[in-house]
Image 1 (cartoon, rainbow, N blue to C red):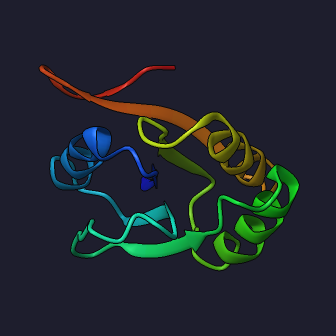
Image 2 (spheres, rainbow, N blue to C red):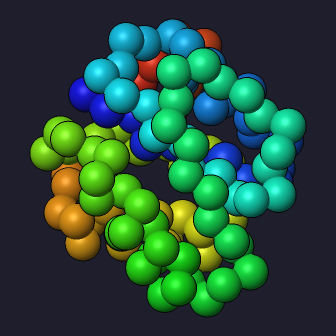
Length: 116
């Protein structure tokens, strides 16, 4: 399964994303990040930058164009622990438009868990 994780400006949630990337064997990791989230580095991840100052529809359209060639599976694990509502809505809408199925994923004390 592929992991798609959003990385926003909220550095306090970056550990969640880093744990998900490193604690499971993913076929592919696509890290969608706000262009201002520059200090985050992860190996073996494809990085897709967005401009969160754009409208929700503008972000969605950018994501469709950037993700359609990167995603190979029919379903992805999605982490939206980081970021804000506008960014999350644009990402979820883009994934469903492509179309790919979405399984929400989180890292807890028990490890990686799918929550839907």
